Structure formats: C-alpha cells, structure tokens
Length: 382
Image 1 (cartoon, rainbow, N blue to C red):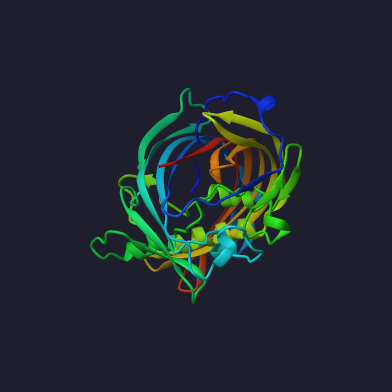
Image 2: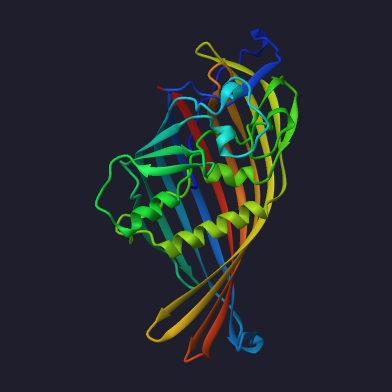
C-alpha cells in the first residue's frame, strides 16, 4: 500500500519531562484495538524521454526520437484500518514482557491472531496529459476504491508454517479473486519500522530499545522505507470500475516489491530528539532522515490475436525523505508518522511482439517520473 496525513503541531513541554532512559517498543495489550488512519497526497510528473524501435532486439538508433509529451497525476488517498490483537500465544512465554532475538513476524507479533477491519479505503486521481503545442492539458479525474473496503480479515498464527494465515471474517461468494486478495495482504501494521533492532538483534526481529534516551542515534535498514509504504500489504486501490485482481498482476506486484526490498541501498538515520507531553502522555520524538536507492525488473508475456508480446520493465529509484515518528512510551505503540519525500524513477519499458515465433515489432521507451509525496499515519487505541 502506498499512502499520508496532516498531524497538528504538538505542544513541547520537554523541560518538565524525565530525561530517560526509556523503554520504546511495540506491544499492545491483548484485546486492544488499534485504529490506523492513513492519508497520502502525491503529485507525479512524468516525462517521456525517448522512443526507439527494436529490430531483433537491437536498438535502431537512426529511427529513434525524443517524445514531445509529458503527464502528471495527483493522488489523494484515505484509509482507516482497525487491528484487534488476540491473546498472547502459549509458545511465546516471557517474550511478551521481554522480546527475544528471534527473527520473523512470529517474534515481532506474539499473538494468536490479529483481526484487521478495512473500515474505509477511497480517494481520487487526477491525470493531466501534455502534448507539445497544447495550450491546456487534457485532464481526467477518477474516483478510487478497493475491493477490501468494508471487509475484515483474520490473521491466525500457524505454528507449523511459522506465519500468519489470512482468512476473510465474513465469506462472500467464492471467486478466483478472493484468494488473490488474501495473498496480497500481510499482518504488519505496527508502525515500528524506524525503531532500532531490539538488543542489536536481527533486522526482521523485534524492534525497540529498553534504554533509549534523547540524543541517541541509530541506523535502520533501507528496506524499512518500503516496509512503511507496504503497510498491511497491497490493497488494490484503483478506479471503481476496474477489473478484479488477477493472479498474474499480483505476482508482478509482489516480484517488484520483493526486488525493491532486496536491492534497497543507502541509509536511514533516526534520532531520539526529545520528549513531548500530549494529554498527559509522553511521546518520544524520533527524527527520520532517509536516502534510499533501489531497482527492480519485471517480465510478463501477453497473448492476443495469435501474437505474443513480451514486456520487460526496469525501474531505478532514488528517494529522499525527512519526517518524524511520535512514539507513545506507556502505550507501547506508534502515535503518528509524518514524512515528506521526493523520489525519481527512471524507467525502461521494452515491448517485443512475435507471431509464429518470429519477431514482428519492438520498441523501447525511456521515461522519468518525479514524485513529491506527503505520507502520514495516525494511531489510536480504542
């Protein structure tokens, strides 16, 4: 999922607050419901740099030309989730009070189950197409929704597989897309991605620190950026009349996301800046400074009218982001995350069509996307 909101300025009463050390970790009480509100606003400008025909897979530079055109798209997305935490698992033992160094989601989430209700998922996208010589762009606005809106999913811990298995809380008519929807989701809605690894443990293990105090600094893996954007999984947000999700589309999305995580490089530096008191609660203010690069390649083959089209898309991504995470120390949960980021995607799109095993046409399109995004999440216990 990719999404942001505005958090009101909070009063600073740092001088009257204890200096620490503080235990900062994610550990909601069993039975607690965490309401997660997400809003994302972004604007992407795309410039089509060049188009070049391919002959037997080789660029024909003499026929290549620059494309006189560009487009922009603005997104406004709002999401409300409710996560209800079940009992602590019997196999966990004392970990509920003191996380161990084991890795994996089972260690980060020591619950028998977590039930997620998708209370609302909606938004809109406005696209503007620019062509050389046009005085005004051609603009289109569409409403966005998700087939998950209004539904509930239970993630139940499976000891044998060591994973949380999702099922719909209220079954609907069996459709092929049901399995695709479930396969695109995961349990992580914690907001703890920018905490340090617990006691120096593995990056995919519990996160937090039992002796954190102002001025402490730490690095988190660059992949944490993509974990934040992928909170809860892929929600299939698109035009209201869009087709149901297909297995092929899911596999392409998962492949791209997995590669971006695996290839993530750069640095994310966090610092415990200060304490703020809001409504009697102590919030740790953690600054976030991210400089991340990554790349991914996807391949797919489509068939239509006896013609097979192979499409290869390669993207190289550069991200710069700054923001802050407010952490509720006594509540053992995130209070909010607010980040503004600027990213550049350089994409190569190669299409080769074949009929009767012979190449009939091909082309390579190069483009650049520049995106400014505001991303904020709010967390509240009910």
